[in-house]
Length: 623
Image 1: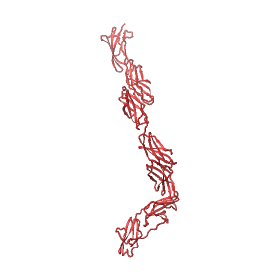
Image 2: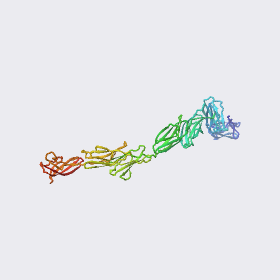
Image 3: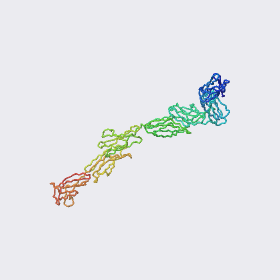
Image 4: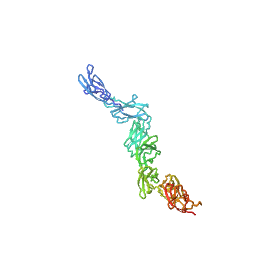
């Protein structure tokens, strides 16, 4: 393109003078010419008002306008008056342009400016005698290619020009280094911002024109999305990431040879997260390109973040079972590409849940103590209860609510063995699911009978609080001080203790149930207490004749710690008394008493601390 001829004298309104320019960029310098002969001389000066603001000067033939605007230039002659011309001073912005590198040290320039009527381009303004190219207007036209000789760094310039104006607008310059081959661009990260937009970050070279291309739901059918120049990031909008996946590539475009060199490909993922019972199901679809090396599933739960590696590049789903119900989980999928590129999906959040029925409480241990019935139970650790509900029945009555427990233990302080109480433990887990029906546990109820011979017969109710039943029972026998005397193991629910035991008049019993399953605490019944009878022994007659056979009378018995024995005749006279349990030898005050029937009375204190009286008769015989 040739350089347009510019500049000519411009005549004033009345033709009395001329100016070399009447329009141009600020700063604009104009010169007055062809003034009337004989005027505007030192002897006959003219008055010049260049800006129409009554700022006047005599015989000033040159003026520079430093601000943009429209001005009325007047020349006032002494002889014939004034003449004028309009001067237009335009703003002087430097025009924007882009230098597009091509292979083989070539380049093209595109003016991206619309402030001027024409643009003057100099590819190599740092060298002399380089022809200029004039574009009639910008319209984003790319110039023909220019080959830089020698190759290296050069300076290109573009200045604007308006029609019928001075060619004085300021040029904009850019330094440019030629390229032998256009470098291949690289896509680095692809980040999904929201449901309609993504951000691409890439590595580019300066002064290279790029074409960003897109393919929908595939990685082969690409179309031009936008041009990229002078940036290494792009935010793309108007997408539908919840309905499609998109693949991108960036091409380094050589406008001189119409050749495009493409980058690697990167794609979004059509990513979903769905909560199902006890699992959050993650699924995605994206282009199955050979450049995918692996995936990373990022998980956020509250303030806790973690990452799950998925090393199978062909994977399209993942089941997250490491969850707790009723919590919010947020997922993002990172697609890892060979070469280090990463594509991050939209974040998808779900609230986990479970509808699995919790295991019922089927192992309950009951221990009867002085303060009531103490219940303890085991519970499946796979479920987390909010709390426990305890129900109780009495006799044949149905179960009804008793209390709430926050741990696996509770004590029923109102327990009474006679009421035949039974219990059932239930719970609702933190997922809101009600546990299956558990076992009914009834504390062991122990009863016993003491017969006249001090034999003790025990009976008790079977224990059924454990799902796998009772292995055996242990009869535990305690003395007055509470020390364990002896144990008896049986599989029956009855036991008779008729073994002689002169040392323990007061005895207590409890029954301990042992579970078939190891690790369960034994269940223990109520405590029953028995005080054995003293069971006195005494002869009906005695013969105090010195043959050492039945020579004295005394009263004996079990468990006696103290006895006051007294002998009376039939008229009530006291004949004998002892607190040492000495036998009566048939004398009173040293005198042998005649054969007769005598009365005896005994005040007795036994091992249990009881005091009682017994009396009877005894016959004194003499041969």
